Image (cartoon, rainbow, N blue to C red; front, side):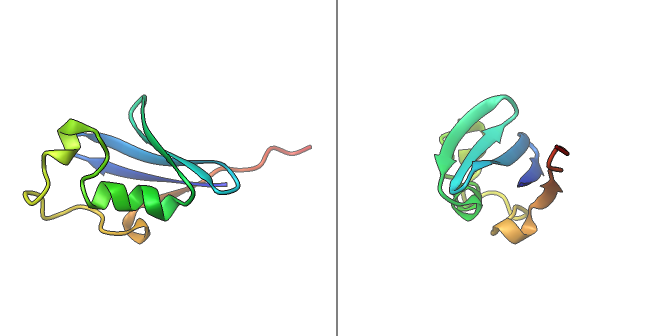
Amino acid sequence: MENYIYNSDVGTFTIVQKGLLQYELWIGEELLGEYQTAEQAAEDVATFNTDYVEWDRFRNELENFPTSLAEWTVVSEETPRK
């Protein structure tokens, strides 16, 4: 499974794959939402629509933030050996 991270000035956003068509968006230890795709989660961050006030208040103020999932860092999680 692949997870994604983005280090922002307000904390580290993480998109975690929990299963097929199930992703969670986190900042630190706070769950911000559940999504069918990682792209949808990244879009909420890019549009400042996360319900995390510390991030969302930067709408129209920040110039350097990921506008798509392609700009996030991929963290590959190894599948445990059987």
